[in-house]
Length: 209
Image (cartoon, rainbow, N blue to C red):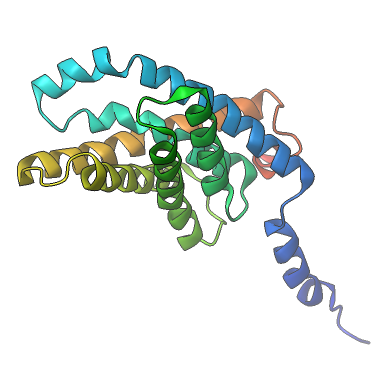
């Protein structure tokens, strides 16, 4: 009598299938990117009146609410759960924001989206695209916030004082963890509960709980 070999032979295939993008993944990731890109643009419109008082309170603290601009990558990755999802959705959002009209210029906006998406992507990659719980989502948000803060310091605040730079980085990391990580995770849970993610692992996982 031969032992069954199904599980040992199917696991590599199922693993590669789990990470392979489907057409629905591309469509939904694109929709997320476009929708959040409009939000990015709107946030840029009201950014001056919002960031001014915060910066006056403590210079550098404005990086915390600026973390709203890194939401797309974490949200897209939590929904799609495939390699490249964070970079793709954040980049699409940045492109949409730039096309509508970003006050920071098109190329710089797109460059920022690429860097921020990479910051989140690296965290999910460390966990081999298998852990989508709240702590990992917050770590990914923190990674995106860190990437945002460093990128801003290099491009917009070159030569900034150490205190300002430290405050900006810490604020970006905390804001990224809470806004991009925590809120995105809660949003995905809400969408899954409503049945909007039934074609994705996030939705099926919610039904099995």
